[in-house]
Image (cartoon, rainbow over all chains, first blue to last red; front, side):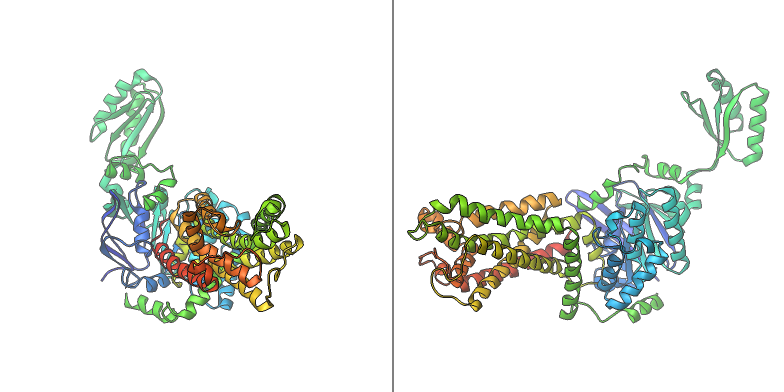
Length: 326
Length: 287
């Protein structure tokens, strides 16, 4: 039985660019899938296909048990979409924005008004409710945008980079909202450029590159796939690098990598903290002064790098929007 | 899965696509655009200044040197001119509609609307309806200014309130039709800036190769032909007839002989064609 969000072989081509090259997804009801990928990988295009904004060239998709291609309008009733740009009318007040969205979800004027008031409270926007959204800070706008996506408490939510460009406090605020939503049973598909965010919020992660899902699993599974822990040492003196390398080779389970200019040595290991203690003792015995030493577990950044073979270009926020227009 | 689906269907209203829903959704969007306009009064004011400037400039700069039906009196020119200025003013609403829709695309609002279970076309219909309200206000103010500089209906024959209102009705219909062209332009360009200039440029030949500002009988034959079949000229001629103002083209071109019908037919055709194209474009629009 397919999940609340299900896609099979989605293909979408823009001119010469194959934005989606057979995307398969299956998100069980009540869970969060984090869609992770470099810019231009096809994350936004996937979301646009699943939210009826874009017709895939090939493939099949179901959202909330409804065929996206055959019943787009029914699907629209069951979903909320919060995009990477805060899509609110900046000349309308927060209240007017939410009321309008409610009415366009086919609520009557009165219930739409009541629901708007409720959401403004819930999203900590009550004080600014009757000011034009133009006067809101970036974080407030993003909250308003998310509130707009939740007007009818849709069972399935799509969030396209919900916290891009937010300060840590606002990001934390949104994370709390998202967690509350999911604990209430909402199914969520989330794209993000923050690996930390996927780690934090998503039950499952799908890594997308060149329009395909290249890996999926829980964050722990993906990290395990990349390899285990490693010891990182920064020696104080450049001339100690060679000796330190010898020491590490004795403990390591693979090749030691050396960064000359930062005097950093890295070696894959097994054995955890106990081994780390041994390494420190041995280095000390040999009279090597160290600036820093630690046991590192792979981050999602490492996962990403080892899977896609290139560094995630996470800084230019524009790209994902353009990917859809290309 | 079935529980989830049932829950959604249970709370969902009757299937969309009905005329009632179309009207309701369009009005919600129109209201949104009117609130916007009220919060950006400078846009409404600039929209007014331009036609007023045209009235004043044309009346006082060109007024004494234009030959209207053998007369070069500046009063005759003012009475001739106003139908043209009114018609030009309503068509300039096109650029506003285009820029507004392009701006909505750019800001991601069109995406939000397209993800909502609302009637197709309501976003565009709401916008064009709001522009119609603005156009009506502009016409009202402009008519006041015209009266101040000496424009009078019935200066060249008899007319009545019914005919004068009919003329304004045709003007509004023309303006409404042109906002659908603006909507299509707005959906087709990448930036609001491009929509503003792209929405204006083509209006100059359309409004100047016409009977709006000069007597078409002074044009070279091929240009005159274009001017007399120009949909825009039909409305101008219809207004002159209904206002009983001077300078009606004496031509055997069908739109000049039956200007009221021609104006109606042209405007309705423009709405039908450009609404269809714009709604289709909207449904596949990508920000």
